[in-house]
Length: 185
Image (cartoon, rainbow, N blue to C red):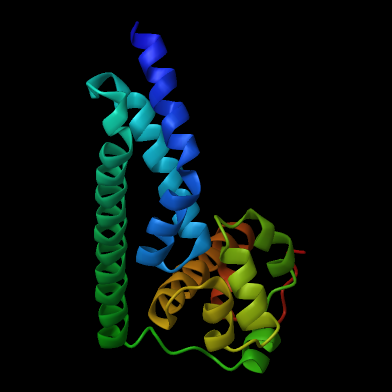
């Protein structure tokens, strides 16, 4: 009996999928985020469908799950924004937020740099390549990645720290002096 009721609930939810998607999209304004939230909500609903007593109330029950998932998204997003802003304040106070001009960075770049970029975590290599090596503006990159300029600054700082660590591990002491006469490649 439980399995039949669960499949009935799922069928009912799938019949209303487009209305659910519009509901979430109006609240988050981003199709990709809306789809992620909808998927997370479907997963929650399938996992909790046993708690639903009447499959006719499945739609109202699912809207409640959607509202909670949207609220969780905004809470999570707000916490990340606060962490990034705190990190940026810390960088600003320490003076480590200044970025060298791209031509200065390229003149000092070790020949090993291009070999180490693919080994960096996440999208760090892409950020360094686009901003530091290719000279793209931070504003444009942030816009394309759909993140705030502050978040980009934090990620770029972390990417540079990771690259610095990789260069020091690979090249040793010559990396601390600008690698102008690098012989490790």
